[in-house]
Length: 173
Picture 1 (cartoon, rainbow, N blue to C red):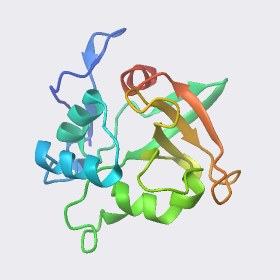
Picture 2 (tube, rainbow, N blue to C red):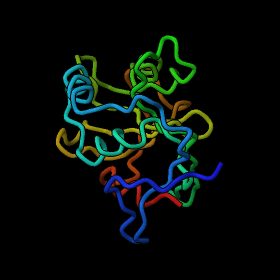
Picture 3 (cartoon, rainbow, N blue to C red):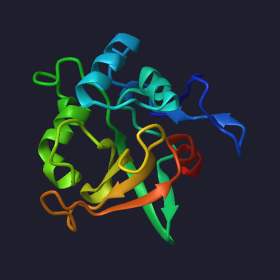
């Protein structure tokens, strides 16, 4: 089904258009500021404003422009992760950020403490994940690919693909 252009203030600056998400793929209910604040407290991090706007509009959606190139290799987003209210009973529960983190958490981070310092935000084709990586900057996380086959317990294999979430969105085509 053709996606619908949604207005949320996220623009591909270089192409002058908003992001297109397959409307029926958006996971409802959409998170609001209260839910996002609860998640930030639980995860012990501060989400970038652009990412919060994204979640409040496109929670768990499938982008129409889902490919990006990094180091001459093309990657495809299967689906963005989101916040699923009743993830235990929802058929989309596997796309909840907490669920994904609970399955790969000790392989996703080198942090043995509390909180999340590498937050999964999208599933990539072939099992890798796109992540917000807060390890170097808790105020402005970079976007990284987590390579599942190369990662071990508390030994993640992460490669930076963009300086921030908005820059990453501009890479999609």
